[in-house]
Length: 488
Image (cartoon, helix red, strand yellow):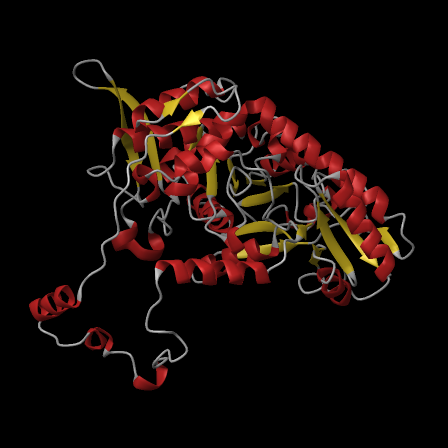
């Protein structure tokens, strides 16, 4: 891997721009990005086209393509849809529908975060060369696409302090599941079990269970300390000879900062691998997984959504995965390398590519080959534009706004913080009323007031996970506090 360019953000993006044909001015100046658009009109099939295609394959109606689906399972005719609208009518209808949804102040995190996305990110990412590309294999991959993936790997590997990164996975949950499978493959002589703290995102834990339960892998839930909301070494001692790997979230689902150095060294002392699950924005100001303890984490993964990807009602998002170079042969997905051709010119190629998932099923190195290439494009441009100093500012300001919000909310009678100790940009509060009722009432004030925890953590009755990022202003923090004070 070439040394990372995250500190040379302008140069990295300019090189990338050359390969995709984008004209970029001085990136340090606002609104300096100009594009040379390449558009392809959408031409729908005519009735004659459809008839010709159906005749070619020997059927009369499109419904015949789905004759294997039982009639009682089909939805039937969509009678409430009109036969067709003009473009102007459709645009008017969409704008009317959009006005029905009020703009909400979002104080809900829980794995998906509202960060500011600079305009050039999606101006570049939505170009046709990237926007329509899915998962090109070697024969179809252009040099521009390969270079972008190489830049992404380099940036992510540097940010997480690891030696190797792949060209992304489906999302953070599947990245953790693949990391667990990878750890089991790397420790063939160890127990077929992984220690999973209950401070890991509950939905991530569900995905891991779904993917591993039929492969003879045991996921051992490790409880958290009631006072700190994080994993304690004293709790781990009971499991020291039972697992091949320990998963360490940083920050954890409650926003608390785990004692990653102590936990990493403990795992290695007991011949376990360490899997770090991280928020990439937080890692801009916290120690990187590759620096944890004396040896660093063996595998690090996480959700890349904070890196220039909008909330989008839950997706598509982006899975990050890195590891030590000694483990590279067991890493799933694709890895792009940099080389030179016979004339000495720089070129990019797929160095490693797991293809056996097509034939080996559950025994394959990779079960999830979708790599979310468009999200990779956005994340690469986002990191290149901000650079390490920009990521640090985003992380620091997010923490500051959360601290200010926490001070205002805990000043309200009936609101108290649940866990002690350091946090990043999320904290858990306990209210003196049912949180579901309060959250519903906050919606009438156009506020998404947090994430109710009792569904996943019954012991945390009336508890609420709140979050603030750099996008929340002081006035918005006060508006949230004022509304909650009124309701309580």
